[in-house]
Length: 315
Image (cartoon, rainbow, N blue to C red; front, side):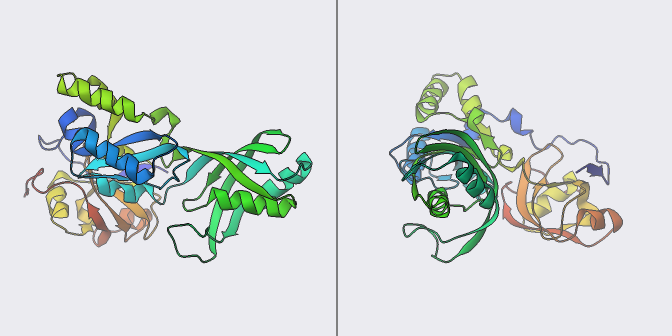
């Protein structure tokens, strides 16, 4: 992947780099990566965040069961729709699986190999989706340790993969039976354990913010742009920004630079030259075609995040 510049643009005075936003701006347009504790639901954690920050909206990405811990991105304020960029992103888990009887290590590893790649899953009875067989990709299953009937392993999977069901199916394949004993999510899209903050961290940071010190809060709440680092991007000329904020489609002449390996209909992020997120949408031309042609619709935005008139209409 390479970033290819198509048209030069003179820097303007409009807009603001994400890292220059104030704490108050982040509270109303940011994302915090919560280390979800065991006990509350993901919805309750989002509600705690909303209450702590005294804001009207907060939304999480990728529901975790009450007893499951780990990475839970919670978007705040008008940034809540950014979770749409994270929902389809890959996930990573550390899983403790309990076998119902001891099995040889070789049999376990053989089952791990069989369940790596494309698998078919029937979601559990208690799930938020329709119960029908779905195909999902398991990217990696790595054994960490095995002690008797307890197996600790790391799973890197496509979004929508049920780890509880994966453990059940692994046990069935081995012939021993198995169930998930504990689960921790260690990565969701671009966010990992190094990005985590507890609810107490957030409460403390907000307290210091109200006392006049913003340093801690600016570490805890990230710009929404951090949630799209895994997506391919198109950067547009300043003169194009406001039209997109008003719902226009993105045409080739308005593009400054691109990730050149964008595929047709790929979900992408549309950015300003100051690295601000304008919106998310689908590419209507491949990167190679955008480079080749001087006209045509390059992308259609599904979600617009930037408010109109941050960049005024330019001629």
